[in-house]
Image (cartoon, rainbow, N blue to C red; front, side, top):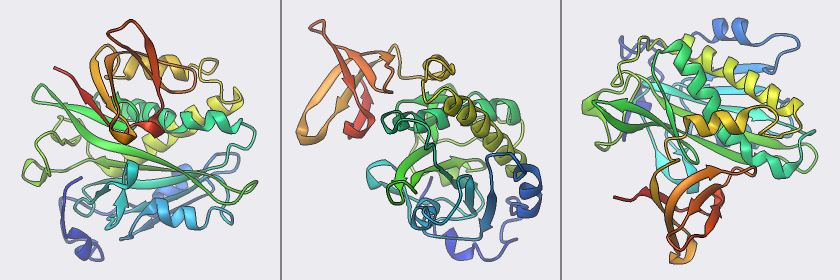
Length: 290
């Protein structure tokens, strides 16, 4: 996720021979099938934001619509933070989900579920361990240091009764050291991934998302019943560490991150012996202490 003007060259499919384009037809053959989650899969050379594009059509599109961009020039992270990356250097895509049978108050688990799905998919397909920083960052280890290699953005979309949630994923795959925007950024390649071919990586992540989402939906969104809460906690690098949660209005809470509760909130054990749950929507920054 590095500043770049490469989106201007995204229309040239072979402008970087080390970063070949995705094979949209092969991806559709592998992922779009009767009875499966995915109903459509489109790959575009460039767009502003795949999340914005899907959100604008949420009412008319079926659940399981997938939009992938080879480059994005107005991509957004949480709290509308902006980022771009060189064309075809990563996986930049969004999925439309409509879990109508799950109570809306449990939809907050979707970005955490997506993190688990990405981590488990990459473990199999890339041979690299991906840790989760609550609530929405994907971490890899580069030269013994945890670095952010991706992020997840979940946004409500569509009208009542017809809408859903658009889940956006941005993942640095072949980003090189001289392309890093900041020293603490990373990529699968820098983490020593066994494979950086984006086609099998995208297939693995989407299949993993389909599996976890199906289990969660069948459990009525109960994160404990489907194993999601336990699996997320096992892969969450935030737990067990001293952190400072910066909240709106200049308020901050510091303590040890001890759990992720049934609502997906991070529970901090503070110095005065209290346990304070922090919701993802309330956090401006979450920083390590010490």
